[in-house]
Image 1 (cartoon, rainbow, N blue to C red):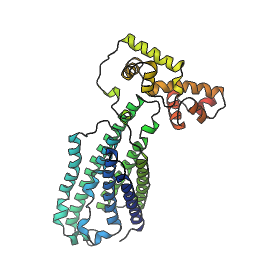
Image 2: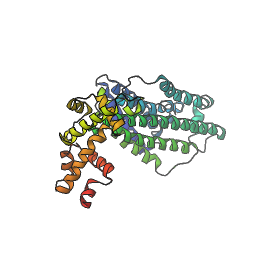
Image 3: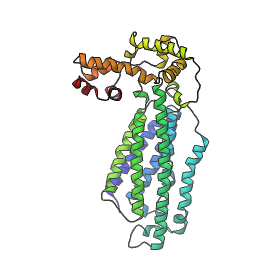
Image 4: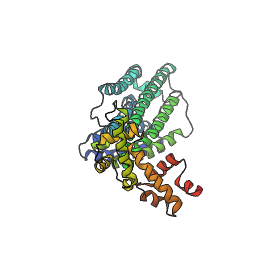
Length: 374
């Protein structure tokens, strides 16, 4: 009854997670690392539950089958809480959200009651074999599987959505303060939301199909393999992610209710100073240019500059600075034979990928295509 490849993969994943936990617990006691510890612990319980089934160990303790299901309901919330500690300026999480997250395992435990108390260990073990299963008891098992799957999908997708929105707000506020957002953006986490969403959805599908007696060819091998790569990528990215400072967190100005504090004339004067700082002083060539540095250069407060950019110039700091960088790049692409990467660094970008993305969004084509057409 041992499924060899998944057993090996889940054993490897448990090893990876344990090593990551040992690394994290030795780090400074910051909330980001504390929340990561909780997330890794829940992943460890989930992995142990899968290994328990695939290794055939459930034969010796059938009453423990499904012990990981309530904990699995906390994976989505734990990922959100980790993202909150990494990106949000608010140290505390809304209590209502915490209670909602905890209600998931409670609902699952309630749905598991018939399976736990109405079936003996021997009857549970008999359900694993189509030839020995009792049809009436099998209906209870199917109901339990389908119900817990629906609850898992609902809670997990909701918290993945919450995390996605949190990340979008984080990016927005970075664009209001920095011209270089790549190292601060946690884009890897956004990618992992889609990866975990896909993998956990596939688990739910596999779990439901298994309860109905159906299987997809190769699914039991492909899914653990995908999860192994996803887990390795997540652990590496999370361990390499340095905590952001307070200025790199915050609520985006565009999300905050506010009234204009400056007159139109004052904003026009600030707009002239900003344009002069870019056109004449060429501050945009500084790859580390921030709202704070620009504020010091033109002797205007950060709030006044932000208000002018958003309400008078209808842009944000990131877009404003990169507009001048892209204009400089457009000239260099047609007037020189420099490599695109060299041009990107020359005009103030600190990575080719950020340059390509910003250039294509502003011009409508890649730098290479622009050079070819001009």
